[in-house]
Image (cartoon, rainbow, N blue to C red; front, side, top):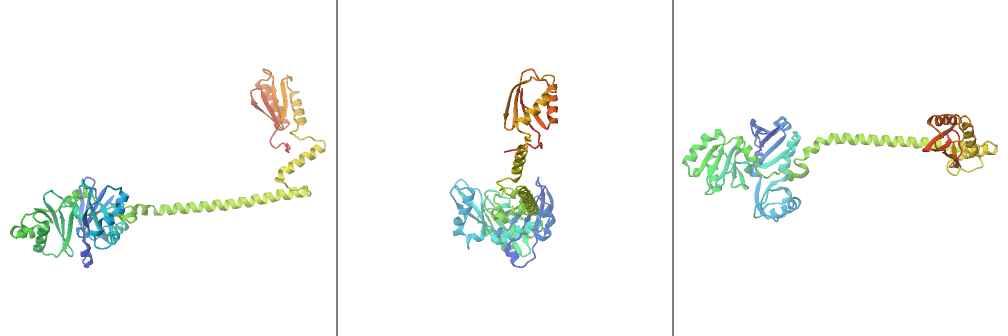
Length: 416
């Protein structure tokens, strides 16, 4: 897995119309440098998309770091309180800025980073459009190596001049854009650093240009030159402590997470819609079929019994009327006591032993029978069940020694 670090030039140089190139470095998880170079941001899409994480080092001139004192607050309450805490120190409306607070010190003081919202949103959206998976936006001044008791500085050459970056403490720093005049840049650095010794990081190509100036000019007093390498920025960025991307909310680092799920969610919603529509169409079809069957049953009942109103269920009424008609004609229903007991007597006649019944009761249109103990074995039960099945009756053993005999399904038993 790799991390891509990009140092973006200051907004002032972009507004000047100069061609914008960005120093970049691709590093492995162990901090080993895999690739480095300088390129316009739009040409880094392959590296951006293939990297697990993209760290944008925002120009120090575009990030204002403020010190504020706040009472102990939860993250949500602190976020809501930040605009009021920095209002007196910010020119313009804090609502137009992205505010990110660092950890509190022992006295309750915090470092708050302030960036123009429209500017940082443009850069983050450009990275998201190139396929970035996770984005961190760090102030460049907090990514300089720092030694207590001194000031760290870097002087980088851009397309529109110098960019001066200073880090005065572990949590504070600043930046300026300057004309490409080495002597004036050193004087500005010396003035901003005060009496503190300065470690100035320069690209190898700049060392030969600045070394004589530092050795001879008053502005170079107390300034130590060091070659600038990506290893310095990579190591310091891991302890910067202020990530501006989460403060962007939905347009920040998490936006790419939702973008990756955009099409799967759309497909899932479409599949759900198709299934819901299909189920409703099938339900309407079945409802129409049920209504047609019910109407057909009603018409059949009315044709057979034109003078009898349908109370609830025409099929049940039809079965009841057929059963009554059979009874009136002298034909008992299959679930009447006489029919059931007669069929049982016939079936018992085929058994070797006929005195097996202890009690006989007619209940719920079925014969409830208790047999004498030790009078029926499995063979006798099977023989009796077979004889009753031939007469369209079912024998079930509800409990040991307790039988129930009722018409088999479809045998035409009546119901009242």
